[in-house]
Amino acid sequence: MFNLFKKKSEKEKLQELYSKKLKEAYTLSHTNRTDSDRLMAEAEEIAKKIESMT
Image (cartoon, rainbow, N blue to C red; front, side, top):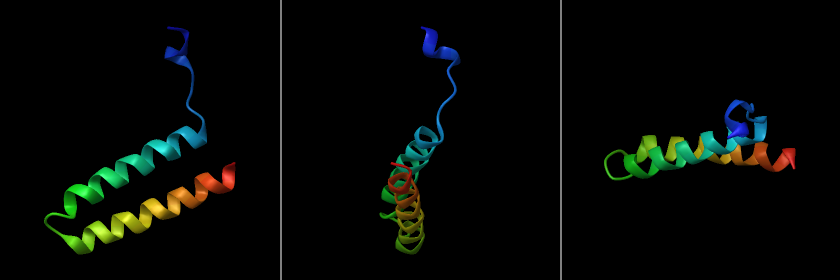
């Protein structure tokens, strides 16, 4: 209940963005492989940022 107004940390924001990119890449992999690969590359860059934060 009290976490309702708690701001997300930078790491939490990056993790959400990472999972969103992975989901988009998966759905695009069925129709457009080039865009899917681009999104996977972006997700990997985000993963590297997350790793560097810990």
